[in-house]
Length: 514
Ligand code: NAP
Image (cartoon, rainbow, N blue to C red):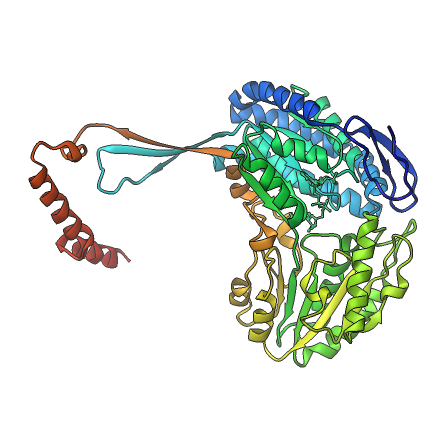
């Protein structure tokens, strides 16, 4: 059964077909099957078989294969870029940039895995007779569920790191961008030694639900908090661990000593890039005192010059038609509560295209300041001080990214923002730096992708305590003279940790050594 629609990609029941359409034109791009539990389970079983060989390879062997995969992806930048452009609706430049950053992350994970996951020897404290090590091993099969806004880059943040850590992957792309997932699978099949190392399962939320309920060893989910909760509930049945990369309401703060014009240009970029459909886009802006007028004027001028849609458009269509309703709703709510539109606004929405919008006179009770808008909108608030800005920025359930502009004490200010990542004097830069961990807190999720943390997220940590020779007392609980043994433990605890002579001596040595 096939459901035909105009710009929406709603799916049929499992077993039917899912149509993928260009959100800018409605053009039919292709059809993929809607897979159910049986197909997903088959893919996971094949991935498990492939994981035996892939996981047993040395890092050097995997590095060679993953380099071939990265080369194939880089070589096919036009194919992939063009498909992202047509399936997601973003401009070609954005699309090829997405391929570039995906290659950057895949390359980093490939080259870094051996070092980041090398076995470490650790101190053993009082147990000098033991050699202690921590080692990292593949988990097995990782299920990756991805969103549509960065259909390649976002899942690659999990896929690249999971593969480099020695796992195989079953990837469920969004129903809005299944063909990107398919092409990635094809590129992997053309370059990796086994086509089941990276597989794509297509379909809608039910297919994602099937993957969450399957026998994967870990699930990396990127999407909204609402769906994240459903995924966690399904994964809970098998106690499958999860990484949750969820939405955000990222604040930007412009301090009194910032370059207001420069900050405004970054704010417009951060709010409008990918038509605002970025989990770490600038969603609200707090500008301190005197900077406000210059900031607002520059931002309004810059935003009104951004071209929407068409062949030379700098931002494209809103990918998911329902998102247009959310953006309109947030804008209308703000205007009804007294916000002033300086450019753009709800009346300028046409089909799936939303004009860049700058709003002032916004208040904290407006939905535009509390809920994820995911559109090309920049609401600006004037504040009296950096402290006030930080307090209001932190007054949110989310905690994904953030940005701060200024000079004196700006890094300390960045540290005080409750979010997983902060860009100082720029926006979103942390996403493209593969050595930095990426992830949020609160409603923005937990766990980390990218960086060494990302590689370890997809590894099983193993602790080994190797006793080299035995010393008396380790099996003290079974000592024949329980009374004396108990007394000895009490003395030892007091002397070593309860302010006794050993404790004080250790502190002195520590102080001496600095
Ligand atoms: P979504 O609606 O939550 O969907 C995410 C993925 O989950 C899609 O593949 C979706 O499939 C699938 N899904 C839906 N229902 C499911 C279920 N019951 N069980 C398992 N999977 C299910 O999110 P979205 O609209 O695609 O993406 C936008 C959201 O992602 C925003 O909130 C954005 O901030 C967030 N995001 C976060 C990050 C990050 O790294 N933190 C990055 C990018 C985006 P279908 O599409 O086929 O329904």
